[in-house]
Image 1 (cartoon, helix red, strand yellow):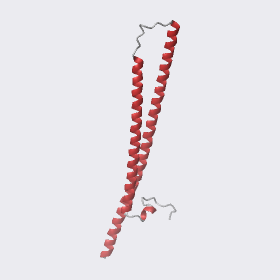
Image 2 (cartoon, one colour; image 1 turned 90 degrees about the vertical axis):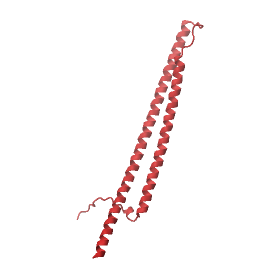
Image 3 (cartoon, helix red, strand yellow; image 1 turned 135 degrees about the horizontal axis):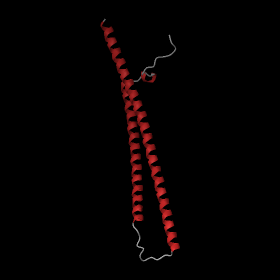
Image 4 (cartoon, one colour; image 1 turned 45 degrees about the vertical axis):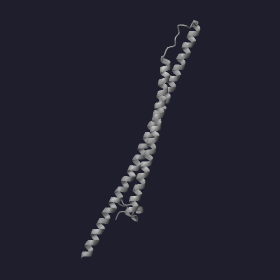
Length: 155
């Protein structure tokens, strides 16, 4: 005989449990999965709403920058005009860089949350599948036991 046990789907902690208890356990796991999935969906929707708000603000700032001021009544020296142009270009570049960094950060958060959600879903699905297999195994073993008992009772 070998010291190595053959793997089975039967687990010692499940041996004494009734089908109702296993069904309740599977229902509990399924409910926890649904609650976690709903919570993660809410977080994702919240992040998407934040991203849309940032994009709307960026669009409104872009529209404000796109409208040229009426410069017909203004008269500035060359030095002042150059200082204004350099300042505006510098501020626009800083705003653009800030928006690009913020958008990348938000997208990274959304991707990370989606990955975590997918991992949680897969682990819950695996646990549920494992319980379904165990329940099916118990059903088959019970059916076999029942048939054997009936056959032995007829002899």
